[in-house]
Structure formats: structure tokens, C-alpha cells
Length: 440
Image (cartoon, rainbow, N blue to C red; front, side, top):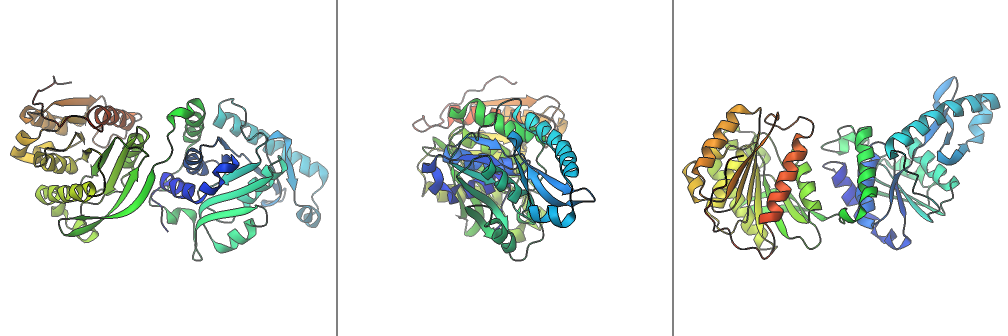
């Protein structure tokens, strides 16, 4: 089993621990990469989220060999066999613990921002990581949680080798592992996107879960699907929050796919707003090898239209399109042939490639362009002049074509969320307006 990213892994892992919901568990993520996985588990269970900060205690002359571990609240767990075999003296134990406890407390303060730990006297604690290699840190975390008073400790991870699962079964009451892989090199090889999680992201996850739990919706049901479009089967990921008010189909741009981290970041914001999302590949892997196919807007639009029919056979909610780069042209061209499309959003798009079909688009259309993406901005201004539907051009100051600048993609996601929740809601009127809004 391969995971798209930590969010995908967390949602799949959440389904595997749903049986623990009635035990009212606390979910603890191992910093840093385990926290975004744990976030998805916690919100699916409606459980409190926190970090489990542990530090291994290394033998002074061989620090990679741990003789114990420490946790918050003054908890210390020692391996008496290692202490005895390596001759670790009490003063050495005290010195190592003193140094490691300073680092432990520093990290805990940074992650929580001064908030108290939430584990408390929980009967059941679920310890979550993004994967297990050797299992040493996870084992230490389980031992520390047990020493802090948990009656039941469950370790939940997306992927691990079989020997690690066996070892960890000795320190946890239950080990939930979605994918046990005998040929195991590293955790990262089982993820399409295994980019490093920062301290700031850990703190943001915790703050998001604590500050306003009512805003954190249950995780959507995510399904791997094969979309049938124009006689071709295309891989996709369909995420549907409970009671979704609409569904947004993503048309990716040149050189991208359903795994696009930018599109997935936008999709997560839409899902939290109660919208379903379908990210799928417009081209097969063989077709992607030919660069000309990426700019065949007619084929791409036909695939999107076919996928729309496939989705309508399964879902009744209104449908909108989110297109990026050349995918935006495909979205606009497909919308021109489908008066039931509820809204279109273009991110750094090439609407000019939709050609004369722009006149036929009736769906309310939002064009989002980076202020530093000069050529594409000019093309969007010219395309907006052709649109006869309700439309708006939003410029993100200082952003380049990929919106990689700090805060730029967040602005895109927020604009898309506002546009779709305004125009793409169950029971809304079909898009018949031909009015134009002023340029922004």
C-alpha cells in the first residue's frame, strides 16, 4: 500500500481505528511527521489531539544505544539490562537525563504554545506515527504513556516492517498497521509526498484542533476510484464529507497529476468547508509521456466531461471545476458544453487556450493569478474580457505562477472556498446570469 501524503495516510488509518471511538481515547502524535497523521485520526474519532514528546537516553560512550527514555511529567523508563550490561553509573544517568529533559521541555513548549498537555488520565491512548523503521522511538513513547497512567495503549501507524510490529506488540496492547512490508527500506518510500514536517506545522495542527474543535469536521470518506471517461479508465481519489453540499472536480495542469501537493492543499480546505472533491488524472501514464497531450485541450476537456457524467451517475450534489494551468482551459471548455456546472475556479490558468468557447461559459468563474506572473496575468485579463458569465479576477500580490510564496497558496484556497460555497450549494439556482463583475 502506498500513501499520497500524511493526510491521506491519516484518513486511511482513521478508518482502521474507528472501533476505538466508544472508548473516548486521546490521540498522541509523535513529532514531527506523526502529528499530521494523528490530526486526521483525532478528528475522525472526535478525540482530543496532543503530542507525545519523548527523548531517548543514550549510553554516554555509545549514544545511539538507548538505556531508557523520558517523557513529560517527570516520567523516566529505564532498561535495566542495558544499564547493567553497559555499566551506566547513576551520575551518568542523571547527567544524560538532565540534558535531554531540557530539550524535551523546549520542544513541548514550542509545539503547544504554552497549553497544558491533554492526555490527562485517559483510559485509552492511541500513539500515532507516520511509519516505523526500527521502532525505538515508538516503543519509548508507548512505555512513557503507560508510565503516565494509560490503562490501554494502542500504537497506530500506516506502514512498518514485520519485525518492528512484532517487537512493538510487546510494549503496546494493540498495534494497528495498515501495511506490513517485508521489503522495507525507509518510511518515505511508501509515500508519494514525504516532505519534511516543520515545528511550525506541528504547532499549527495542535492549535487548529484545540482552538475551535467545532470547525474541525469529521474526516471525509476517501475512496480510490477508477474514473471512466471517453473510453479510458483514469485513477482518482474521491473524498466526500458527510452531507457534502457540492463536489469539486480538479483538472490539473501540465506536468502535474492527482498527487499535486498544491491541488491537494486546496482540496483539504474545500473538504473542511463541507465540499466533496475528486482529484483524478486526465491522462494515462503512457499519454503523459508525450508532451503534446498536455496541451490537447480538446482531449482534456472531453475527459473532464466524461468524468463528470461518471460522477453524476454516483452523486447528486452540484458539481464545480477547479482548474490549474492548462487544466483551467479544459475546465472552461467542458463548462461551456455543460450548463449544469455550478462554478469554475482557475488557479494560474490558461483560459486563453479555451479559445472562442469562453463566450459559451455560463458557470460563475473566478480567475486567480499571481501578481508576479505577468504573462499569465495578461492572458487572464484578455480572457476575462471574453467571458459573458458572472466572473471575477483576483490577483494575489507578489505571487509567481506556482504560488510558492509564503501565504500565497493559502490565499488561493480561501478564495476558492468562498467562491464554491457561495455558488456551489445544494438547491442553488442554475448559473444563468450573464453579468460581469468589475476587475479586481
